[in-house]
Length: 188
Image 1: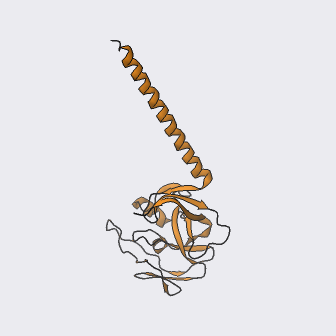
Image 2: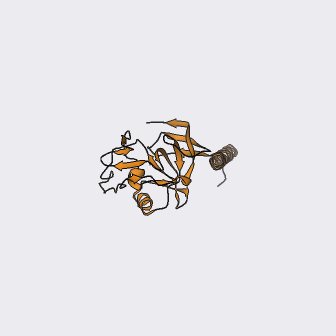
């Protein structure tokens, strides 16, 4: 059975429109991917910081307390367990982790104490309550505390469910990709 001419023309026009839409969408994905790869743009989909588009800005100095950074978490037993439990996402960092956005709250030489909350050099870190269990009732192992070693930083997020140095301890500052800057974000 042959379709009437107007129906065939309409079907061809719909296919052409679908092909154009698909091509434009594919090109947009490529442009966004290249901007992320070469422009330092990243999309944050976790509640530790506002959701949306962020940019990695080069850090041309030693990291300091108060810096909001993108960092690749080290490939350790604690971070592998965290990824298996869904606390950390897969990504392009060593160990196949996605970069984290966290605040530096202590640097080398500072004393960190972990109890019900975190203190650095005997000063309380805001919004640093330490959870005993995760959202599914699984026990969380907390960092024992101590002096932050040379070349490392202690990370924190004020989001209550954040997986940060309260649980995995200080991390190498060499894992810092740069400062985290909001581009187009939304804080729910």
